[in-house]
Length: 325
Image 1 (cartoon, helix red, strand yellow):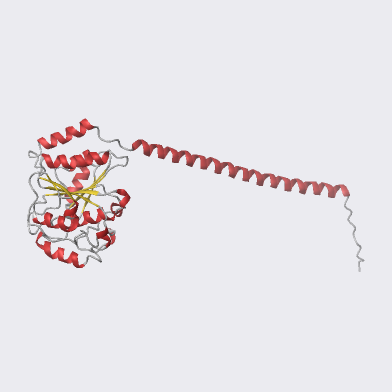
Image 2: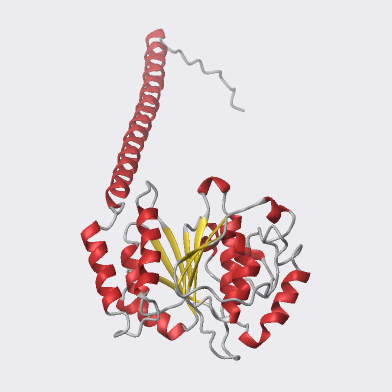
């Protein structure tokens, strides 16, 4: 049997000292590495933030630079002149006086600091003219024929146009008016967001952002309404009345033009939803209204006298007449 013997290991003090120094040096190295990483991250953050701020400033400057100036007056006048002289030759249904009335409002609207927002119901020979006269602002065209709207966008990509499928008929005029009166406090309210409306007269299938725009001018020259089976302009006039009343009062009233207001549908619906009290003037077959929210609207009435369907059988004068104040 072998006897076990204890082994004694001696560590020299200098060896411990060297190990301690090595450990301390290692800790300092890691600390230095950590601080370097923190400094690098901070520097990268500063650079990224500066670049983002520079890019934002550049985008803002670019946006400011792309804001359109009003169409020069000589160009504006020339466009209106040639459109007025040649309106019958190109199949326009607007007279020279009617064109001048719309142009005067667009000129005044574009003289303001903010761009003019123009909404047009009807894709017609005047489409390019309206878009040009409102060069500084935004023009949106609403048509009822997908083929013609698509062709317009292909030929003139600078024009913003949408198609709407109307479900109304001219022959249903009085039936729809009675329905709107029954739903006056519900789906057919004078002040509402039409995007969520189920009123039969509401146009609610346009892009969402269209309903958020404070429209300065609305021109109604469509859809077709010369046959009993045609869609008529009941929905366009109702929608114009609601859009004008639903924008903020601080944005001012909306100028609403109704073309061919000597026809029954246009005349009756204008009296019902735009109101005779808001009639500024009639020029030939063009009715000019200025519409905004009133106390009557808060009582679920379009007009202060609650409206009167076909309250007058007289058609607008063929001459320019001031409405009674």
